[in-house]
Amino acid sequence: MRITKRAIQSKIAQLKDYQQTFLDEILNNLLLVNSVDVNDSLQVKECSHCGSEHIIKHGSNRLRCKACGKTQTTTKDTVLYRLQNKDKWVDFVFLMLSEDKPLSLNDIRKRVPMTLKTAHAWRHRFLTSIVKIYDKLNPLKDFYSSELEIDEVYLRFRVKGRLGKEKYSDYSTKTTTDFRDTEKEMCDSKYQSIFACVSDREGRFEFLPITVQKKGVVSVETLKNALESIDLSNKTVITDKGTSICSYMRSLDDVKHKSFVSADIKKGLVKDGIHNNNINNVMSLFRQWQKDFKGYSTKYEWNYLTWFKVMRQFKTKKTSLKNVINDSVKSLSHNQYKSLFNHYEAFAI
Figure 1 (cartoon, one colour):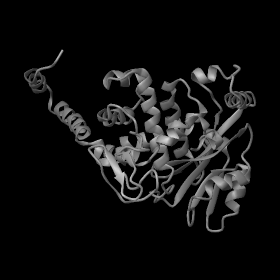
Figure 2 (cartoon, rainbow, N blue to C red):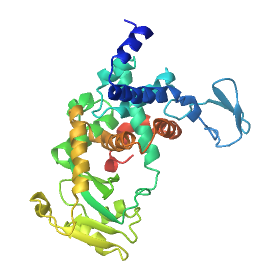
Figure 3 (spheres, one colour):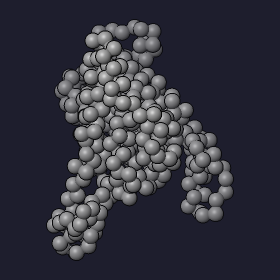
Figure 4 (spheres, helix red, strand yellow):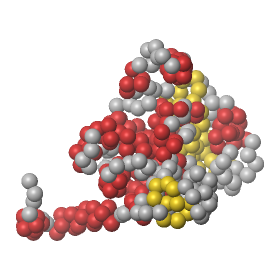
């Protein structure tokens, strides 16, 4: 039933002052969503066939390359490629980020009319797009604190859904059978997906992929390969007394390293501010947030970690809807999305 303007005005008039202020904030957020145009983010800079930058408009939704003469759509290789109802993309992304608890696919498809299958496909289109763009950014570039906490986080290797339930079945093609055999072995051998959580004392945090391996301690070399991209110069790094992380810290000349015993933190024994409580808080929020999914496959692990990170940035107003939309469209992630099932190595796409 359509609500009339008069009925809305009558209800608003009955609200208290603080309630009207709260409603005004909600309306402004919704109007901001309506002001974002996904077409503004479509800026194809080169030909997908020959790589030339000499491309011109060729009709309303196509481009033509002046070098090779071939044409392509304005959405070629983007998250919107071959996507119908592109006008719903902004609303869909807003719903993915705006709720404290992630909406179920059923909730999303009711608010933005689409099938359940489409809602699932769009979710992973979006997640793959932000993973591709955020992985290219300089980790910790916005970290201004002189103290950083670093800790390894271990999550068990998981399989979920139709593909997971069929992991013991026989397949006619060798490639698919080999894939299922590998998956079965990783489940039976208790593999773990391992990543580093890095946090400063101001609440900013970052996830970094380390590896997927059998249950056990990460080697110093593996940890070094995962963390060497971070500039830790002239910073104080706080970790637990894990053998690998301590060995890696000793190899760095211009880093001040402080360590603690994990058992002491659990008992609440904190000395001289040496703790990783900020990381514990982040992971507590993540575990609580991801409960509503009732589990997910490890192949989606990095997608969900990035989703959580971007959602927290959006909720704390460290990024805007327009920026996220721009990032998702500019990431040229379509090919990566189509081959998502091939990305098990280190669960980092």
